[in-house]
Amino acid sequence: MSWSRAELNDAFAHYQRTVSRCVELGDWNGFADLFTEDATYAEHAFGNFEGREAIRAWVTRTMSTFPGSRMTQFPANWHVLDEERGWVICEIDNPMEDPGDGSVHAAANITILHYAGHNLWSREEDAYNPLNFLATAKNWCRAAETAGKLPDDAREWLVRMGEKTSG
Image (cartoon, rainbow, N blue to C red; front, side, top):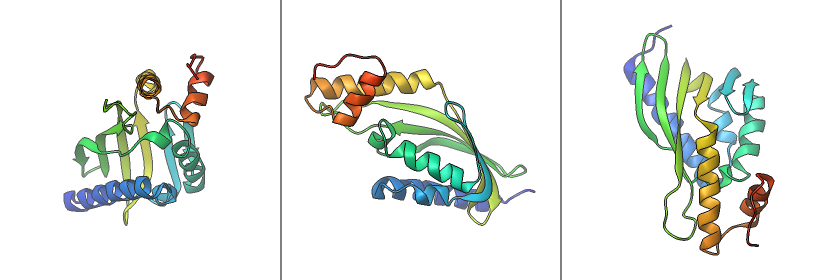
């Protein structure tokens, strides 16, 4: 089924506003509600999630623990529309909060969204290099530790990653 450019643009804008609201509230249920009940979420590092409720369980767990819990926004650096397929393809930036020294730590991913109508998506696929995200999170931890602002959850994560900390 094909969609109009205007509808795809509006649906993607709704998606971005919803993600921003989820970050603001610290509640990712609204993100899961962007998907059809039978949606698929293909996350290359974590696996495939089948259905809205599986997406909900994964996203609420992932975004409430480090490093997801320290990501402050998810802006699209660019996006393209495929009206014939009903796809939005974009690059999403994943910046982390200031670690205490003013430095910037972020990694990006490519997201492909399949539109289902009525501001709902039937599929999302995120593609990225997990090693870039791992390095970003480790570098953020090191900067926070140097600034004397490394939170306990990040310290515990860093230790689980096999890294030593000063605390």
